[in-house]
Amino acid sequence: MRGRELRGELDAFLAETEKDLVAFRRDVHMHPELAFAEYRTTGLIAERLTAAGLVPRVLPRGSGIICDVGSGDGPTIGLRADIDALPLQDEKSVSYRSTVPGACHACGHDVHTAILLGTSLFLAQQAAAGLLPGRVRLIFQPAEELPGGAREVMAHGGISGLDRIFGLHCDPRVDVGQVGLKSGPITSACDKLVIRVKGPGGHTARPHLTADLVFALAKILTELPAALSRRVDPRSSLSLVWGKVEAGSAANAIPDDGVAEGTVRCLDESAWHAAPDLIKALLESVAGAYGVEAEMEYTRGVPPVVNDEVSVELLAEAAERALGPGSVVPTQQSLGGEDFAWYLESIPGAFARLGTRSPETGVTYDIHQGTFDIDERAIGQGVRLMAATAFTALWQGARVMDPAVTSALA
Image (cartoon, rainbow, N blue to C red):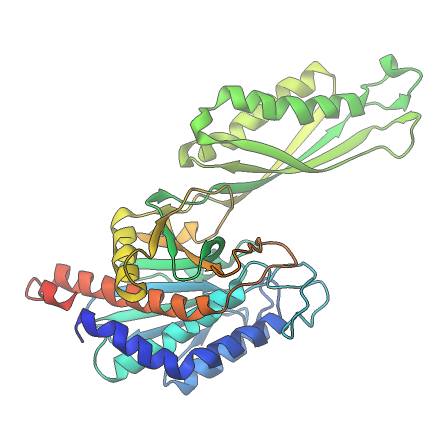
């Protein structure tokens, strides 16, 4: 199949399946499952893939799937979707509102799942007809929000043998029919920091006989972020933001312990690697000045997603082919974290932002909010993008492997 025929094939496929994919998304949306507990969702996906003649492999924990489409001849590329929900209450008034109290697909993972399922069914058809120039690995990943799912996939051979990998994420700031692309870093690193402070307590009438722990903790809360801004290149955007602070239980008693929890985010990978040692040194300096003992628990989250330039070019080519001219728009690097980054530390690839905003209304439903929803036309557009990306990457890989494959394919 030549590249110029791909759009017609996708049109015909979606004319028959798009409504079903929307219904699948709504079913998953109504039954959200949290990280590493996506058993029902996994079962639904496996059932659909098996019915299409594919052989899905469920990961050992019982959530998440790896499934190959096509032959082993030629290049192999990966397509990934995350399948877990968030621990949030669904606040929408829609027929497909979450039926699970305290759980909600507020980040669009149900959309990503429906898109990759549709892409899988299309690729299965093409492979059965002998039209797939290589192999595509479908990765329905659990536990992106934890995070941890990407490493689970990798631990069980999920990216072994892949030449490239691609993924996407709903972007409520971009209109349906458009896709945001960026070479280089597109998300930030995100880690968790817990600081525990100890010192002799006492009566608030005699702070000089204590470590005045609340005051010392307050200095740590303010001076650490301030010091970081002067010790790191500002272009790295290394930020420390506190989200939880606890100390004391009475107004007239100075406590002997306290705790602060926050997140460390960074746009630059080298600054991210240096952050724990730097924060520890600053903490010891501030704590020592106020006579308290401070312990730091630093938990690595994810590095930045760094898009490979060639992979972004392949995504852009696929978008132009499948979504039409003008469908690619620039996007900025965000301070959000995404565990797709772990894949890109091992193999080249790229992460796209799929427009989900209705251009007719212009209303933006932000992610990680109980009101989040999408214009469901984005599902069909996502299938077009991912399927075209698979073919474009396979054609490019085939040309590299065999110069006799001409550019007429594209």
